[in-house]
Image (cartoon, rainbow, N blue to C red; front, side, top):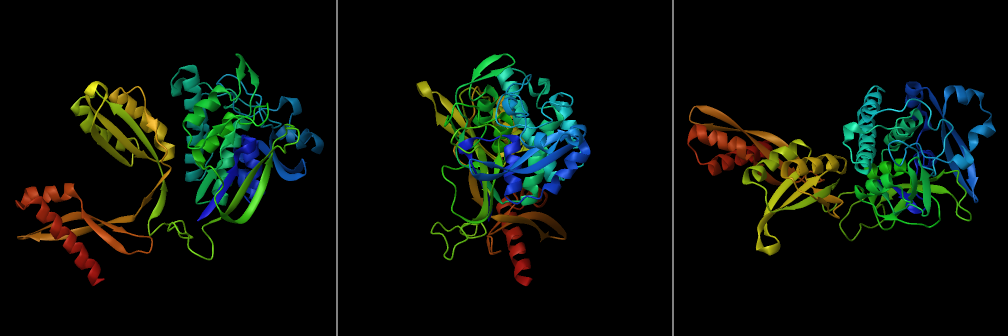
Length: 453
């Protein structure tokens, strides 16, 4: 399994992530799609930060790129160091990303940004990821301002250079195609930052909102400066699983993405390391194989959402399976429990993909009226490969079909068969057979068919 690990000790911004990915081996020509769609140019140069060689990626509008000298393109705006995404929806944040096109182009609504990204003819996975990052940003802005997602008006986030950052990172990650992305705790810096509405403590409000939705941990320091921008936070929140320490890797590539702020004795760079996890001469003692499977099961990144309910009607609880599954939930459980003052209640637990967690949490709140939803510490689950086969069972002169789920490990060894209840129930109603008998016959039919193969 190939893992991409970021070192969060110097924070992150959109352009630092671009630089780190290019330095770690991503093909910068993948960015040409964005240049063609937005009329911008990515300027990729090599700089040295406190003795560390790093890639610097800045974004310029074509006219600027043609007129600027190489020296003007190398280092961004100096004192105007900003990321492209404002810490709030109507202003920029003074932070660690910096590009020549900063703030250029129209400022857009959330819907405008979605429409623009969808018009860029991106690979499906890239488009999905980019839109998910913008949703993270939009929901953070909406939470800060007390508005709905559809009412968010992006200013810095809607500029062309901001979109170039987010879509550019999505394209470079698609080119690298790691199986897993992790980050160590991300440092936000400290002090204060001046924004359009006033002076705010670091981290900026939007960064804090985004961190609530992320699986990684947010830390203050180590310098008095704004290190983590909303762009960097949103990208890491969508892509990266939080770890306390970088995993053991057989390193194949590594590199550094440069920021332009001077952090004194600390090199202002974001490190990215790419390598194989578990690729050692002996198998890991926890059962994890070199391909990322463990004891024949496959790793699946998830989050678990939970809420306690003491006043939900039975009809609402009974409908959560369908409504939350429609919103993207992988599994929904409702467990009876005793709450404070010995009142009966229910615990609702939802397993979801990280990218779907926000939408599912909103749907859960709307359906139940809960005032709080927890995201537990689970970061992944181990699952079997599964496929469905159709069993044909004869009852009298008629043949009926029942879907059977076949579970197998990563080596292809089948260890369980399970007939789908709804199909079996329908056949039972038509034939007057017990449901259990229909399920037994369906499983036997699939076993026999596989044995014949």
